[in-house]
Amino acid sequence: MVVISRIFSRGCGGLQAVKTLRHAVRGNSSMPTQDLVQESQSDAQQNTERQKEILGRYRFTYPEFLPDPDPKYRNALREKLERMDMLARRTHIAIPEFYVGSILAVTYSEPHAPKKVNKFVGICIERGGTGLRATCLLRNVVDNQGIEIIFELYDPAIHTIECIRLEKRLDPHLRYLRDAPAEYSTFPFDMEREYLPEGASVPVNKIKIKLNPRPWLEKWEQQEMKGISELESLSSEKRLKKAQAVAKPWEKYDLMKKYRETIPQEDQNEIFNEVYAKLHEMEIARRRQKHKRVFVRPKKTG
Image (tube, rainbow, N blue to C red; front, side, top):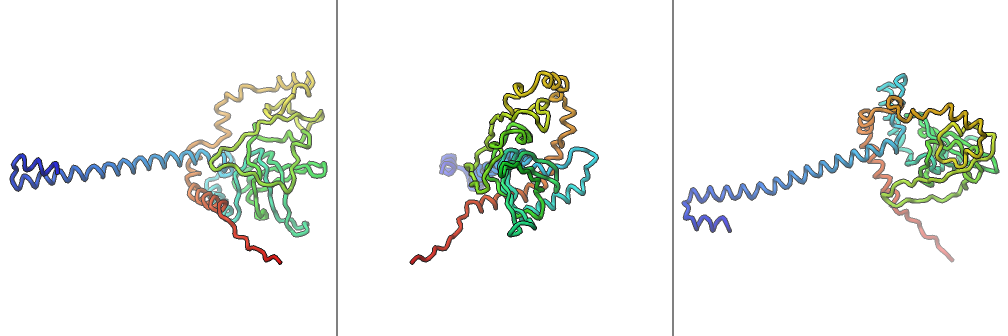
């Protein structure tokens, strides 16, 4: 209406009036197009940032997809074939997110078990290996006897892996539980699963454990473990002096040592970009299955 009023007020001719209307239509039609372009660019930027965040999280959630950092064991073709086999295996068994300190329940085939199937519940005290050789070490105390089992995550004999309690600890491993009281490694086999709120971060258990008196299986005073309390009171002065003599406090500043022990960031991004689509699809399917209700047929009474 504003454009038409301007045409009549200026007394424009027929050709000039058509040109004025055409310029006005072009100007009005260009605004929505620019808005759409800006919205698409902002959406693409948000998706890129979200994907970068997810890829950064995959480094800790799926550490077995990263190869051995030692160059002697690197082989690009073998690593790619292993990742394909790992993704194929994950379509048959759900390997949940877990860390050192999480409590797992593993059901696996056992030829000597009564029903050829056995179940073990324990706390993960160590993770190791890469690729198809990725392992986790579970510990539990049964009948006052410490039992530890090493499971290969991609072993075909494993039926199910369930994370009963998802949490982290302060140390990269918990082998010192072998020298700790049995109460810190005792978990019932009928332990119910604990659920975290949707979108919540993984809790960190900052518990500090007091070890049993000597003898110990390892020289814990020579290892910087944050989860052990009153370590100095359990060690003699001679052992503490020896621990100070063999200590290497400068290693935490050695950048080349850290570089040799990790995979470069470029290689990590390339690996997780390769498996991102399949892992993300599995996560969505697992999330839908968790919220899916199972119909239980009512039983007749009377």
